[in-house]
Length: 158
Image (cartoon, rainbow, N blue to C red; front, side):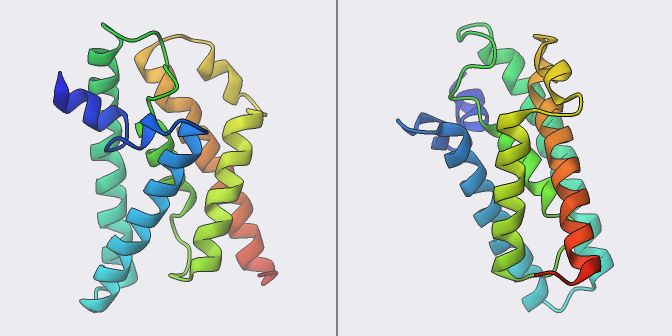
């Protein structure tokens, strides 16, 4: 059970006394920035980095949902300390963006906005009270954030 707690709490960031979802999101965006910086240092192509990011997202999503199911046996549904869904969501928000801290910060801010406000159907996933529902509302928040960031990049606003 210890490993499932470690996974679902985003390596313990979900135990933050204030705003654990934000703590998990910050951990997620920092980890992804470091990982992608490493890929760039190894001179990997943007396509290879994208594929590795997608594999990472898919793997952590599946592992996260499995671990969420395990901790739901002892914690209430979608306990505040469960933040692996925020990690995955912010990673989705950061897909296809340049490796610049400004874009990663924007991904974090937009993701937290969509995750907290839960517009455009996000709340429906949250209300399902399933292990997948815990994850999918943040996946959708990440997708909406990704769309906004891509518009910002296209319009060259940042």
